[in-house]
Length: 153
Image (tube, rainbow, N blue to C red; front, side, top):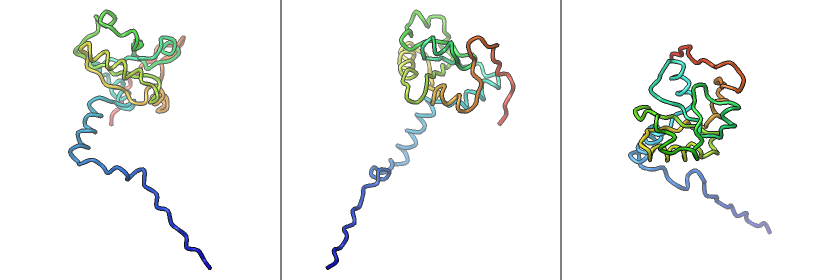
């Protein structure tokens, strides 16, 4: 006597929650673009001489000294306060990064800076994604890296 096989139907992890309505999805993705940037866009702007934003490295001073994005300033998120940022221009966007997507130092820095009246964007992927793209890093003891070669497109 043959036994019938019972087929077990799994629940799709992708489809178990339906996508949001188009209006909700649009708001979500517009918010991401308003609050995030990526290494490609930052590099493009730096190479083309854009000066209306600052780059802030929210990692430790030791990590910054080892390597950082050319032109970045070091300000670990724990040191951000009104006194430390008193001379920073509030009319410029601050692009913040940390180590990687697994690091939340940039988000912590963003919260503090926004509370002090600054406008910020987080560079997604941090220095890890910058490095993966092959963009130059300023390293301790090496000549200053210049990013002034225009890139179009």
